[in-house]
Image (cartoon, rainbow, N blue to C red; front, top):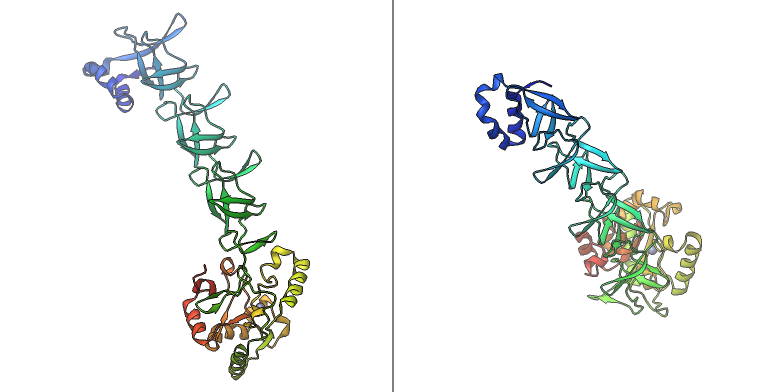
Length: 408
Ligand SMILES: [Zn+2]
């Protein structure tokens, strides 16, 4: 318990500078001054042995801080000093770090001062209330909601609470509005709940699956939602943009539209087929024109085999197939087992088509990675005849037909 005042001054200089000046008059006889703990009438005091003076305020001894009130009595428990709370254990030593007291956690800074507000500790954020107690559950701070788990650590990412999903951003703040997560869009209401089913945002209707993921480019109960997830009226009158017939999940054709296979497209295909043959490759246009009713039976067959959600990724509803226009050509190679199969993409014929079909007026209509735009997964076999000049231009742009025509 014995200690030179010299050490005391060093520590005070770091901790409470005002005390340094209070003690500076005794700096000349530092070496001779000694302090000692003394127990009198059930209380501890810290005395200057020479003068009998009782120390008051903070003292540092044996690597611990102690607090002596104005009468020199060593304090235990909570102490309020200079607008901060401190906690002194039963031996009077000041506590630092996490501290559990009457069913609540508190955090005492390195200086011993009780922390309020946010604290970052071991890679986690915690929040201490105005009274210093650690928060759990939902917390509103500066107009943002946060969620603190049962151990007090701030949550990020998805959380299920009160029968709803919520999303907490990397900074812990609850997200509202649109959220892009793992390749899907989610909508979080102004109070943070994840939307499912039909809902409207600024007078536009959207649909989110039970998972919360926004439905895009598909029909839900007969209602079509576009690439943005917006419900839009489907059309069945031929839709032209700059003279180009656009057929997709939004823009279809009437059931009476039955032109048969387009002769110009067929002639272009035959030219392309000859060119491919010159390279030792065989091309087959195994499916070109399809009538409205044939497309209907095809689509229904896929729906009964795979379900509507999956079927919609590769098969068009009747009235919404490019094949009905006579301009859509499904092309395969010599191996008919790979016709309309994903594996076709790896064949020499598919590679040749991808690199050369634009020279003959065709474009690869559903390229890889563009499902969010076209509404269809990669179909290495499906080509659309648009005519020579346009096909070269679209190919060089690297865009889908929707993008090229400004429809996305
Ligand atoms: Zn096709």
